[in-house]
Length: 174
Image (cartoon, rainbow, N blue to C red):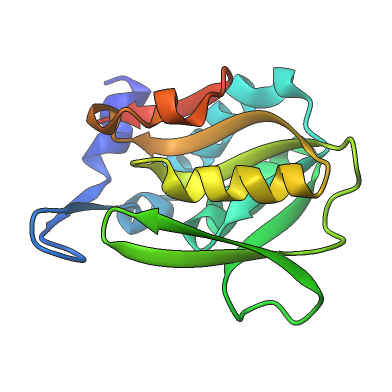
């Protein structure tokens, strides 16, 4: 069995969550499996090492799990992007629409030095709304986005085209 099939075997599908018609791809069974979680992080690192990021930016919440493990593996710093109201210091914000509502994300205003190379990481790429907002924040801070990395990509939603990024990595596609 290949890596993609092994990953998919450990992703739980939850229908009609958070609303009717959406299949939530739950990575918690995969995270629980230490060998598979390590294999995922190792594979993401192997596919993104050429991007040579200074920082990994992880998007709340599951992007923190994947992103911080990847930052450790790659020897980079980790920067969280959080939901509105969660960061205690001076921050920049970006609001956006997602497939089931409206959201605002924030990042500390001193998180990224101008010219830094940034790899944005999340667990799942769906419509790309959250990633686009994160990209806006990174660019607002003067960061250079060198790539985007995900465990899961919902390919039918065509987010890659909306992102306008060449270096998009995902381990599995639905």
